[in-house]
Picture (cartoon, rainbow, N blue to C red):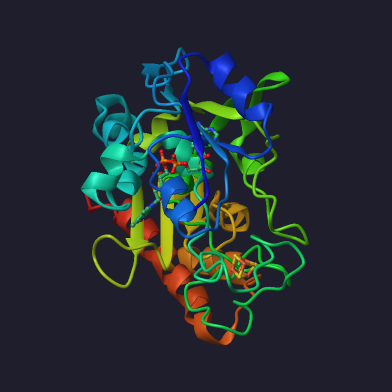
Length: 331
Ligand SMILES: Cc1cc2nc3c(=O)[nH]c(=O)nc-3n(C[C@H](O)[C@H](O)[C@H](O)COP(=O)(O)OP(=O)(O)OC[C@H]3O[C@@H](n4cnc5c(N)ncnc54)[C@H](O)[C@@H]3O)c2cc1C
Ligand code: SF4
């Protein structure tokens, strides 16, 4: 048995100071990742600092028409918030397609950004895994890798990033606010998730004790028409094999503003910038969508069991863009 000390913080500064002072300590929010991994001996904290009493549950309007979401707002609260549902349907959809109702009531938005990969070898403390034990090797490369990533992979790790809601947040250029031992910081969300490269154990640019305090979602009128689609092995309680978040405007048959991001296929929530370039200013029709998807997935690096994902992601992109841009009816 491993003894773990437990305390509850009531002020952000106290939580940061407590974790920063002890390299063997972790924050505890909803516990839906932390407690699982602790039970499996994957995480071995000696101290847990419970942050659930911190005043970080707000879902507030911002002057630019955006929304600020506190790190302790629960996934279910954010999915139900009228501001989120009206301004960013794809965010509400991604939340509702994640986990289960019970988990969504417990799980916090900050914890969702910090959740760990679902790779079976990472979660089996006896298997070699560079992410859990740097330098030990990657069991997934020659193992059961059907759910693993095809974009952003390295020779050291191919684990898929598991979050659904991070995908539309990447498309929206959200910003992650933190409070750490060296004060407040704001990260563009794309910089908040690191590619594995040769340091897969580093997933975020945060220092130990740095607390996510909120997520700023900028105003984007186009996002009122947006869509998140998740393809998975079963219709609920399952992670994505491929997912797509998109918003797109069309005028006179030509694409204007477009934001596109992919989940389930990459080592971080994936902004599809190549595809966006192809789409912007091009005719809004299936051939354009297919070309954009093809160019984005051209960089895919597959292993035998997950080769289907490159095709699946392309088809999902096309389906989402077709749904968002129905052919104009003749006047
Ligand atoms: C069975 C199951 C199915 C799931 N399915 C999905 C799914 O389909 N889609 C999906 O997106 N997610 C899914 N999840 C993941 C779930 O969304 C996350 O576990 C949850 O969002 C984590 O939030 P939490 O508050 O419980 O975090 P915790 O478990 O408390 O913490 C998670 C990690 O983040 C750290 N942490 C927590 N809060 C902060 C903070 N504010 N600042 C810095 N560090 C922090 C903790 O120290 C810990 O390391 C699933 C989880 C389970 C168990
Ligand atoms: S894919 Fe990443 S998380 Fe999975 S075994 Fe390899 S190094 Fe570990």
